[in-house]
Length: 482
Image 1 (spheres, rainbow, N blue to C red):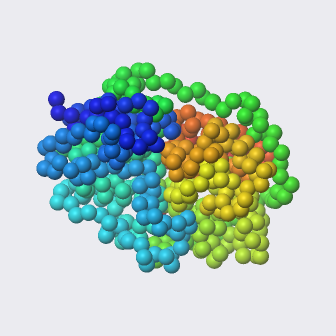
Image 2 (cartoon, rainbow, N blue to C red):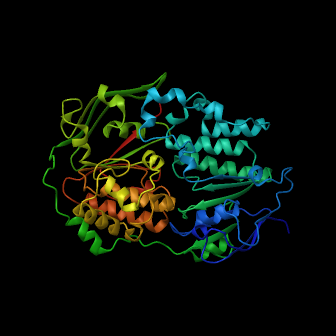
């Protein structure tokens, strides 16, 4: 039997990137794999080892890519990592860059970044599936997080890989696109030699074309099993996982003294946002009152993140719009930093921009000052608050670890703690559960629900998964693409 990838007693040379036990694994021709495991279990370490990123001590990884004409790993294996799908291969990206149109000149457009493709039928299918035609002349930094994922998938599939590895490929995509991508991959597998390896944190929707599952736990690569075996023995997650003790601690948290106590939290009147010829938002009226819990939804590229960037004053165009926060009209004299003190926020843009080699607790503490990174010495009382929230999120043991050495799921948990750390009056969560395993997804949902049960807490949440919304949602807003 042909093994496209085989590892025998694989141990990486560098101890930092080493799993706890040697890797013994064969992936045969025709097998399509789901690599599953909890956040921080070692899934990405395994993939990086299989793709040759980390050299081995004794035995090298063996490959057999036939019938591919090339034997090079770089030609045959294409890997879309979690961060790649947020488009940050360019280290020059900074938070808020997407909203600063004057910085566009130095950034490439989508058309120039897509490789040539001799398979016209494949290119047409991808362009049609992901709506690429409408994106071709857009600057890469203007793409929404969902559009970036579509671009990365198109770019990678156009290169005609023998093995396609994707880290959580379905997150960030609206429901229609998720279904279409599933169908496209299934079709490609049927008519080409493509083999697919998916790295999945969300394991309740493993695609039907997957044949085998590799479980990873505690930095140990488990035995490859069939999808049927995995599904038969998969443990279900309880309906609630947050302890009653932690829930009570959240509910009984003392309130700050400098609260706004205003009936209106967000007021937008006839707000329009344009970039060049493209209108993102047009004449939008929206009022969010104190204590309301809003679900914000819409297709990829409909303007959800742009709308939130206006509320958070990260978008320069917000100053030209008729916007009031907590009853204070934008531009009326109050510092935006004063207003930001009352807002907790997490988003794909924030995760994409956070490339800080700082201890995780410093990242959490930066939420107290609304900065990317920590530029003030942490006070002891601030440290205590940060540790309190990290314990609530179950990540207290990560506090001294470098943020960049954490898995993407662990990083997301740290950024969530950062959003909650100042006990904000307005909590804005833009696709907060991206990359989280099933247990952590349920726990974060429990934390959101407990937080929202407190007096005068207002929530705006974006997600493409209906089941992610907390039970406390009272209102919804659906945006359509212009």
